[in-house]
Length: 545
Image (tube, rainbow, N blue to C red; front, side, top):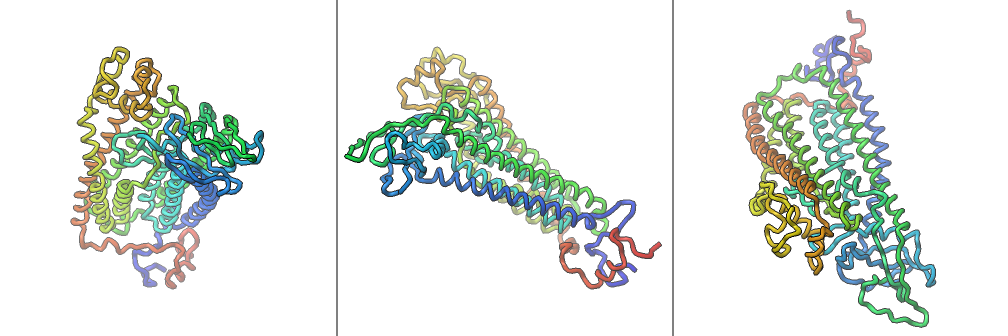
């Protein structure tokens, strides 16, 4: 009995079995979906831990921020104290988390079990040109991991119900892996460390056993309040109060390092789950190709160019990620190789880049439109490509002006003659010209105290946060590669608008959306059930020759 004899359309969700091709995706789909659900359960457990750690980072770093002092005391917060921390570069009083540091005697009031929280915010820099917050950056990194991993899980499960989505799902999951390990937005165009978000890759280099070795904490305990040793507030001693000074030893920071390491481990476990999902997606797509859609529905005309552009944009985006990631790692090396505190955190808190979202949607729509012969998908791709270009234009224009003014395209002379300078620090050209001079001046401005009267002498002797000539060259080449990669995407997305519009125009009016498979778990047509009873699990018709 054939499908036509029971009145089923030729575009039924059932694939006709062919012994030479082997089982179809419909026969292995349920097994793959069970595997995805199993990984989803593992991902759920990891996510619970991830959310808890993100909340803790936010709680520790979110007491209050600013350069002023708080009026909160132990009388306002029983069993807690407001801890004021100084930046390791003398940038002033900043983040004040509520930590459980108090006790009631002058010899043992420091609580080693709680002071490790102070280490978590020691690297914050909320004043000056370089403003960063380690705790909020860690929390955002964890949240970003949650978004990418669960989107990868949900989209893959859906594509295992609608198999023509598999190839576009693979493209998204590649973006997801890049997003979890090293997500960088299109802005900033120039990879400034203080505007570049922290990533799992850069945090891997930053979080190490010695990250708090040169940190130092000194506070005065006065009438139930903790006051930084450099604060001008006076301590009026009463009959039941006292003044004491404490140095928080670095062994108290060991818990902070272990907590950071545990957080990093959770992120890599999430990456491992996404990679397992990607393997399942590749395997399912390989089986799906045994019975291509073109056997039942003719492919669209003119899809070659949009697919090529989508693949080229993916390669260019990965190149941009690697170049900005390399610049971030080089910046960390510059800080760690000098006398600056190794706990200084040079990166900004991450943010959602809408331009990247539209790039991903465009790529997925093009691939989906090709594999499913859907003209509406190309129409969507054209619209999202236009939106991507519109969002990137301001970023391109602003960074182009900076590039031309500083002559970044020229490599420049470097900083070989620093010992014989005669011009004041900050004068244009003091550190050389071109890209080398630009990056040397950048590190002077953002990682050194410009108000220090001895800065000129420190620059002459080399006792300042500065890159070596080889590190400057690395930053310049990372900048050039990032420029080229983002420029390629910018140009190709213009072409993509035209290419997708042409595909829609050439195929407009043809019934390409007739094939709309239902989820395998959906109730089947009674006629389909009747046919299935006459077939075995491989699709052979019982009793057929």
